[in-house]
Image (cartoon, rainbow, N blue to C red):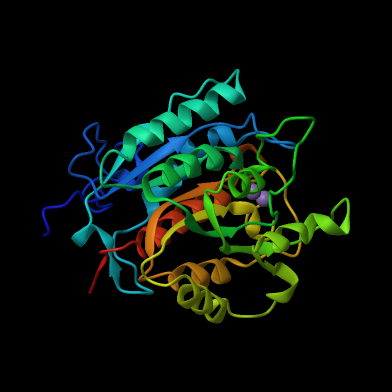
Length: 316
Ligand code: MN
Ligand code: MN
């Protein structure tokens, strides 16, 4: 064995018992030895339609108890080479969105004092703006793979400039991103004006609407994105579960029909291997809207697949 933290095996302790951490990994308070820190951001006060993502981290972790440490599809064995731990949940202020976003940014600034890759479990998508501010503080402008039904580039919602639908306009305005290396994949649904879907392309963002991806493998697109970004550019991956069709992921706040399939999600992520991924998140899982747990199970597996393409992952 590598001597690294390992998820508790389902052959040693029944899957339905033990710690409630991600993949039943050890919890850690000290980040100094970690390569990857998994954390929850349990929040839903940035949403515009259905709430419930405050329960996302808890259920994603619960469903992650099913996942075994070796990736049969790709050969990745992340726990052979990376020290991974769950560092718990951020203590957000559930009565104040503005305060919560400040807490998230300050917490990420603390986390990023260490040489660690944060994997955030949302929470609604508004968590990603303060995360990107902290990531930019450490790494400079970032490439971004943003998988989502929505571009999240509204200017404001009810006069509010920081919500789950305004994240990437603010990130663009604040210079957090490399605009021509922003890839928004899975966009679809209805809008208010035609510009809802085109304005961000004028900034340099690259759009890949869902209808252009229907019935296609995403391996080709993933490979093109990988080559376009290049191996040395810091990249953040923000994965909104509503990028998937509601048939696969109904437990989310703003579902849109005609979405990506689960195999397409895996194809896309698996092509990101070899990139300088410096952080990622999985957002918008809303457990009350999926009593089967399948959405959280899918979210947990997306996080595992992301873990499997991080820099330094071992293969068998
Ligand atoms: Mn989103
Ligand atoms: Mn969305």
